[in-house]
Image (cartoon, rainbow, N blue to C red):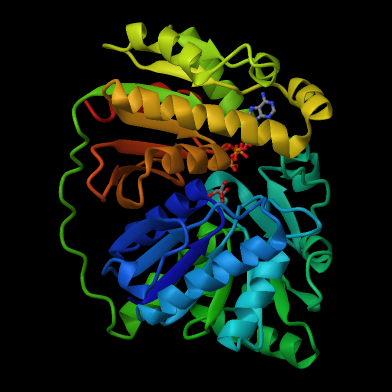
Length: 421
Ligand SMILES: Nc1ncnc2c1ncn2[C@@H]1O[C@H](COP(=O)(O)OP(=O)(O)OP(=O)(O)O)[C@@H](O)[C@H]1O
Ligand SMILES: O=C(O)[C@@H](O)C(=O)CO
């Protein structure tokens, strides 16, 4: 293995796995903290997907360190900590604490923090994160149910999460190329700043950053920061030419869509599927909390409708509705309650013959994949930037499209499924 990746959520893991596969690496994604190095498959890159983004920082650190140990044990020469392109985190973490712990374990004098992902509209300029043309703090991320992002200045945001000094490697330096960029990180480290937030606006900038970190023990960032890494290994003669990809063979069977993301893109995708006549069930979190709604009720609605078209089950709601639920039942408790339900519904649907499943939302995907007991994924064709089809690679007969909340075109649900026909 050349590269070991630790991702803080499942759809983020799939996103970075797709990035590496597109750049010519043989990639396998595993689910959960690996028991040991022996539990990891043979590949150029292994992406370990955790569900650690919103957990208590101690837990996120422990899982990330255990994953790092397994990846190093399996031969990884470099570690990438992958988090969200919108830097989803709270003042407690978990980006800062995990980066800090991995730096200590790997003896890294400095590392990079860069969530830029231009193909999905995320860019970093003068340390400020933009979503499209809006600052992060003016984007729909300000209303995220679990990690509302209300400050776009990443030096400041990260500074609140770590005891390590945080500096900036600005665009003007990155534009000068990999050598100047590496020198800027070294200079920052000499001045005491251990983590450098790096500007990147285009894929070319990300490739420069990747080259600047050739041979470095640790990088942190969104999937974009992985763009230039395969080339480092290729240049060193370490990357075998990729074999022609086998055709993606999704198992025949019924299809369904489960949406637990309340992000702006998912809200549009739910509306689009409804407008196209996809039978849809809206979960009422109040009924769920009061015991008037269970997975059995949802399955009783869904099973007779499974057939030529998919069914859609969603808890997706507008920000005001989400806020009202959270005020009543608590932010974490409402999230956990909805995730548990969608996990149970997924299990019931698969038992009823669903073998093609689209899931919207990182936490939701973690809950669904956990409930299904899927432990390993093979990366298939790209549906939209950052979202591939995947196949369970552990004996389960299921194809999964695990979509980050804010990714994908408006017709994502129906288009992704029709790609398989
Ligand atoms: N109607 C609702 N009211 C309150 N919470 C909800 C509701 N619907 C979903 N949730 C919770 O909101 C959270 C959404 O997080 P999730 O990671 O699945 O989506 P996302 O953040 O949009 O996607 P990503 O992490 O990929 O960007 C989950 O914990 C989910 O259970
Ligand atoms: O980086 C992103 O935006 C996604 O891969 C993600 O992590 C969303 O949960």
